[in-house]
Image 1 (tube, rainbow, N blue to C red):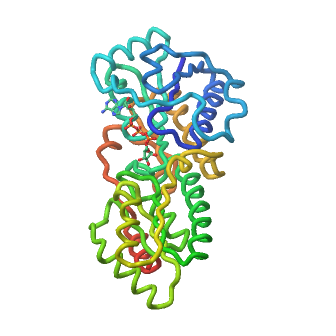
Image 2: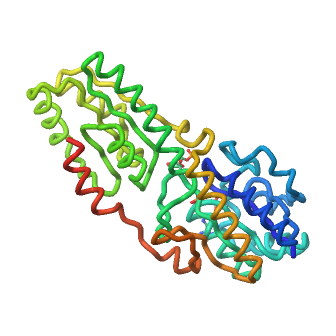
Image 3: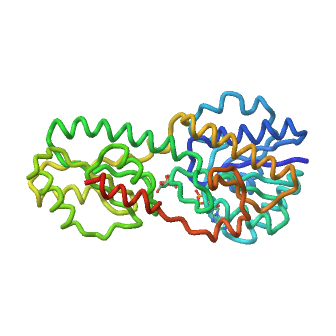
Length: 319
Ligand code: ADP
Ligand code: F6P
């Protein structure tokens, strides 16, 4: 049996470790592996090549994705999905591992409806995939964010400033919530809960000042809005020097942490096992403390919410 493998959507540290696990376990189990460059674009461009154990040497510790990734607009259209299925069949690829986020899983679902056995592996720094308690890349991203925020704390404290630090997450506040708890911030703004009440934020800064707090750190998730404009408005209102820092893509790069390497290895190996055992249309997950898998339909229908207990405790700690 020959299987294909690709990475798709936003890259995440640990994707290489997942690819390595698929390739190496497949070889041990007597399967052939073909790599596909640039996600679904690479299928359509027929950028497909054989992989062996050596192809993934020296990749475990590397951030990014050696297979390259892309967002492929054509792939939303049924005619291109059919073309991709035909190309995969022409290349002898019977099963496909898709490493990426929710969007990439919808592409995998389309291929599986066209007879290509597909398995999704959850990888996104946003951690916004409902069927799994962990997504590859999150731990590295939050540690990068935390280290950067600690540095901003030093300089902001020295100048007795307010600072707004914008972390990634358009629709999901996991990076913001974790990094705010980990860095001892005074405020966290999450896309899921932000009520646009800037007056409350201003009153909070002034109240903390009056109590003698000299530093005020606000962690703002990307999806909440423009941190630079917010910093200007706050400075005007409270009369305290306020700076905004956008952490940006540094959160997506870097050598994966131990947690990401291990989860990615386990999830990649699980995906290979599912294909080896004849399964299709599944997503690998870490759920209730175990590596498991869900039907793609079921996985995509699930809703993810920020953990209520973390939100409650964060309201007591972040103030
Ligand atoms: P992620 O996988 O990180 O959520 P995207 O949402 O950008 O990232 O999706 C990655 C790629 O998956 C898209 O560029 C597209 O090629 C494919 N894709 C996304 N949604 C669909 C869909 N509904 N149908 C088919 N392919 C899709
Ligand atoms: O989905 C991962 C992510 O890093 C989000 O947190 C962020 O909103 C988005 O991707 C940025 O995408 P791009 O690299 O295309 O700007």
